[in-house]
Image (cartoon, rainbow, N blue to C red; front, side, top):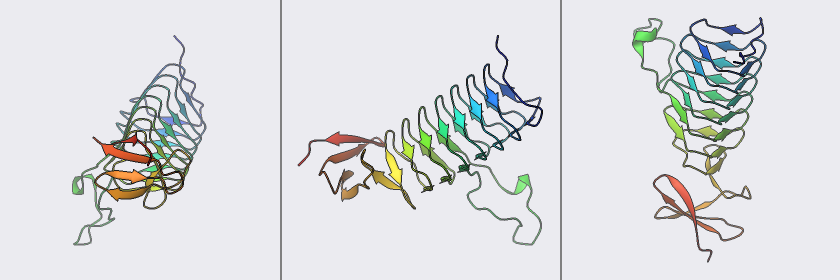
Length: 197
């Protein structure tokens, strides 16, 4: 058995579970009930909220904020300073001016499927699902689900082809690259290439 590497400067709850060979770096915080799989890296200053689930082989880079009840499947990459939110209607106080507490709202989560990546400083506004092997470009603000294998860029994010050019919606669930003419069809939440024109 190979134990996780956790420096003294990290704050890891004794109620958290950290898998074998996982490395947690300085000043990271892993809250109670969080579960982090084997062979993961949690970067400097990252925050993993209570009850968050992280699969095997994930990388969570420096200063990323992963709020509960987020769920990351195996092989997920979270770039530096990414934020996974959990409050659809954020307010500090109730309408009568009382400071809100946990009983005043219901946390909603971000789910990131196997092998997907979220680029640096992107914000995923819960509740959203990032499909398997999708890529959210750096700085994007995700407010709706991202299909499996999609590349999305911008604010708000929009589909992009493998060359990084934004796809143009053609209606009926079809998209086209403005440069190459390659076409894609959205089926069951995933983009599939179709014959070029």
